[in-house]
Image 1 (cartoon, rainbow, N blue to C red):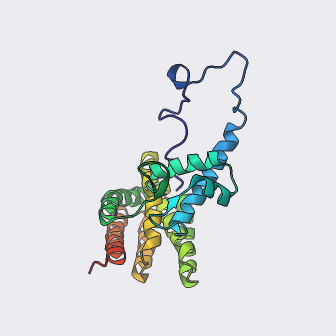
Image 2: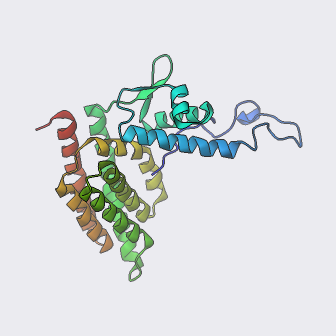
Image 3: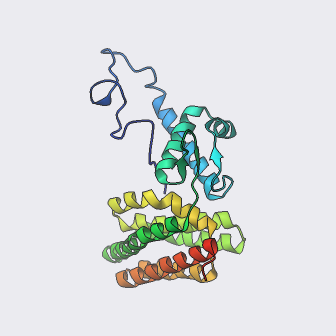
Length: 254
């Protein structure tokens, strides 16, 4: 899931200056940066995705201070899209503002992990229930989203077999995102977007035992069978096991 949680625009998407936040321009004239805006937005998204990936795979470790100029040089971009990307990642909860200036990679404390799971658990369970309901409602035709789920599951297994942790994390993240997409609920999808970056970071930090990979396979079978209650129950078990594994991995819980 790609999250766009912030930008250089105001909260309502307008630009500062004129009435309602719009900058006034003479009739027939275009703003100086009008043609460049779509390209800048695209660069900002690319920068955001690149920085997010570096946080998830820990090239930018927790607590590391990110300097806008240095990140721009590393990504071979100008500072404007990088600045917008960093702002967006602050909104996603992956970065935090420093007291005076700049940003740093957010440290996940125990309370952060607890709060994340408290929010994710009911959303994940409902996503699986809705996905199974949609499959059942479309029978005998299988929705395309089922194929996407199956593919994500296969990629995760291949990555685990090849001992490629980063690729496995990406596949597991995609599996959960595909369930949300299959649910067909855009409001649920938008809500889950706010958690995606932090979930990716968490998945990359904790171990992934074999039994949890097996739980994904059970979740898939329940959803693909259109069994709402079994899909919900298997997802609840998986999320709660994930929480226990995360706390044990990160904070040495017994």
